[in-house]
Every structure is written in structure tokens, then in C-alpha cells.
Amino acid sequence: MFRKITCIAAALWGLFTVAGCVVDGSESGVNASIETQTEAANFIDLDNKKEGALGLIFGMAQIDDRLDYNGGDREDWRYILVSEPGTMTIKINVDQPANIDGGWNIIDSEGRTLHRQSFSKSQGYYEFSNFPVKRGVYYFQTFATAGKSVYTIATSFQPNLAPPPEPEPEEEPEPERVEHKPRPKVKPDSPKPEPKPEPKPKPAADTTKRVIGFISIITEKSDGSAEITIRDAGKNKGVETGAVGVIEGTNQKIETTQCFATSCRAYVPASSNPKSLKKGANVVFKVDK
Image (cartoon, rainbow, N blue to C red; front, side):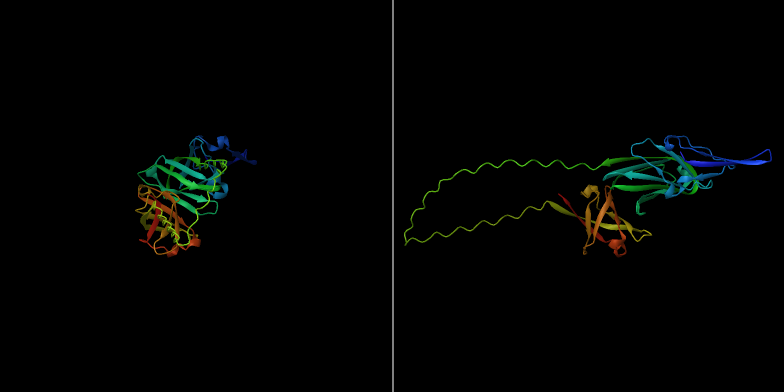
């Protein structure tokens, strides 16, 4: 439910003007009903900017909200607090997708857009699953460019699994005493035996394989960074989220932010010179066989 401040001014007996302000803070908007806006009501939408974002808490029930472009409710912002590294999932369900144009963004504390998606007229449910995050503040923005609709949002979090404890070192047994027998005397005439050559160590077996994908989409951001899509390299070939690939023929490394069955997405910061990337360039990953 929105947090709105509704200001009503009424003339009393033609002599005084009384202004009343009501703050709706029930249940922080969780599972609350959507209030009705009328043409005569004046309202201030507190969550229409990042500075007024409301909280979106992991594991809470779905939150009801809405967008109404003509009614002035064109953006909604939510902040998400992440206390430890892990993966985050966000779900959004638009009640009337055919009646609204717009979309939603996931933004980090530095203002970088980590994921962007537009609403579809034929699809109401969206799920952004298992997105790797580190400790910090993230923002979830929904926006309308035309029309209106009620929607619900929810989020969940899975912390990274802790590494298993290291085994305690075992006490080394005392070495056995070996009696050294005197070497037999060698006659001066007898030749000394030649030492046997040490066997050459066998090369270690290569347990990795090369997976080569190519850059199919490059989306430049206003801050100089870019988001790219890599085709022919995904989970069905062993490339998982977080895998690091190298642009073929260069030393430029690309770390994936999300992998699907046949493709991966990656975020390239401005410091890595994303303008040097070209569509069709090969990205080489090394994965376990």
C-alpha cells in the first residue's frame, strides 16, 4: 500500500480554513488494500523518488502497490538491505498488463542499473532469480509511461554457503629407526655402477575444457558502463553465474552476473572500457569437464 499524505482544505462557515494531514503507516504497506484516488483528492506520493523509497524486506508476504500515469503515480521505489553476500530473487505480478506501459529496474547503492526489464502486454508475472549480491543497499524501481495497473512485489534471499571447517592436522608418527648396514667394500678394479636416471614426471591431466560464446547484445549505460549478452555459453555447457571469461585475442576479462541455459549476461564497468567491445567477439570460458 502507498504511504500518502492527503491534505484536505475545507472552508468552515465562510470564516476559517482548516487544513488536516493524515499519515497512513499501517503495516508498512504489507498486504494492505489499495486506497482509492479521486479527481478531487490531492496527494503526495512519497515513494516516487529514490530518496523516499519504502522498505522491501526479505521473506515478507507480497506487497500491494500500483502505478497510474494519468493520476500522477508514475514511479514507485523500494530499498532492499543486504547484510551478507548471497543471491537475491525478486518477483512482480502485474494485475492488468494490457492496460499499462512501463517496466522495472534493479539499482545498486552507486546508482548503477544491474537489471532492466519492460512490461509486456501479454505477460503479467516476472521473476528475477538468484541474482548474486554483496552486502549493501539495493533499490527496486517500477515505473509507468502510460496507463495504470495494480501490482504485487516480493523478494527472498539465500546466503552463500559457508565453507566446510578445515580438518585438524593429525599428529605425525615418530619415524622408525633403521639400522644402517655397512656398505660392502668395492674392489679398486671394479667399475662404479652408473646411477639410474630418474623417471620423468607425467604431465597432469587437463581437467578443464574451453567454451566459446559470442557477444550478441551490448547495452551502453549513461554512466559509461555496459550490460552485454553472451550467446552459446550457458548452463548447458557448464558456464555458471560468476564465471570469468576472456575476450579472445585480448586480456580483457568478463565476469557473468547471470547465466541461463544457452546464454549469460555480464556487467562491464566503465573502468574496463566497454566501448572497445564489439558484437560477435568471442568470449572464452574455462570450465570443468
